[in-house]
Length: 593
Image (tube, rainbow, N blue to C red):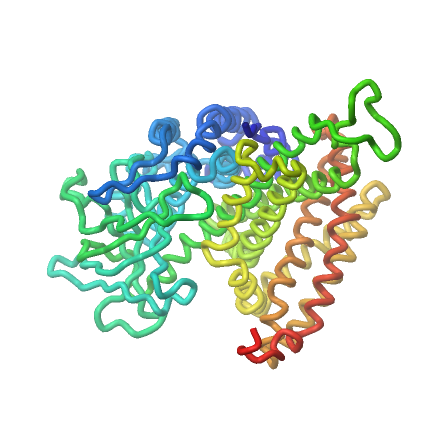
């Protein structure tokens, strides 16, 4: 049976030494996030993930969700009771505003808690995860009445939320959406159409489900600019806010999927359902992007979470599986064979995963901190810089962490050999579950195009210049011998990123296919530089005289060295591919494929 131990110490190290929350005690909610409170919250989250959520993962995968004849959906055994524990524990409102019943703690703490839950059971964690995105959208774009009407119940976990974008004929190209919204005499709208791939679209965990639906109003212009966003509750609300009659929205079917079987991925049918405009008419995509950006960071976290749990199981297996002898002679001569952890190639796989996990977790915390600053900082320049950071790194976090998270799940499966292919060990489920993260919330190719086509040049490249300057400043300020083995490779990789950026600026505008051909390599090149920068930040914290990580410093430094010597050199390969252009990709006519 698979195991999982939440990386409590790792997260505490990041929140107290690498990115100390105490440095932001002037921000709302941060003063309350003392080390003692962080330990208490994370310890309870770890306990819930390890003892309640994780034991349901394998059974939930086997059982899946069931659609009943009336369109309702039954989740796997134990999910409803576990969700009640989650909701009753106040986890949904950890970082939500106190005026709506939340605890107002830093958002990055909620990201850390979500990682624990996702490693324990990705299918289960998706139910509250989608709700967090819906809460963010209503907070940012809802009217005061809408916030008062929906947020308290959602933050309390009594209601959940979804996002409804995709339709059978369109995915990324939202301008093709056909779902219609007809204005009613009372100011509401009647929503008609079908949406597919709706995670947590119907279930038995909560009293109500608040769907956020993109639709086109009558007379709206064609394309993406004609879309509006609507709140469409599964159960309509009475004037006093209590639950009323069932709305005209139903689950038509549950998708049969490769993985995440415990989450109900639904086809949702809207047959004149009552909906309520959120934000301005024909400005729905702006409101939806609030939710999508929240979701994309969450999906990046899923890549890390599956990589982490897969690593833990593979490492435990490698320490116990006896097979062959070490190349340099028997390490356990009294036994029939040595454990496979003695073999360099097994260690290569495990170190590759471990080196990614620790840096990726730091990158998520760093980016989530910018999210907090963008909402809570008192001065406009700080908020703007944080927003720039989020816009630039969101596609990198989503694309790179999920690509590598899936690859790492496959590596962890490889450690098991043939046993990794057998269901009882759980590794094949991690591979299947991790695969979706590369596809939904905008497939990773789209993330790369977004980065290269929109984010790099936005505001004359302000965000990219800020990132390059921050890393250069760090390199200049840390030239001592102890950190040189880590900073020097970072400087070389940063030079590759700068060269690739200049090449895109020079070639992309006149040769769009060159930019398209370079996009994925550029995204991964930037991702490697960010991860290397995170490792340098981690090493700096470990080497600090007062570091509490002294007992783990040797392991940290060794893992950082592995990343710099065995993974970071990939930046040169990405640069070479980028500069090769699109000619070899575009030469064949379509009929040759």
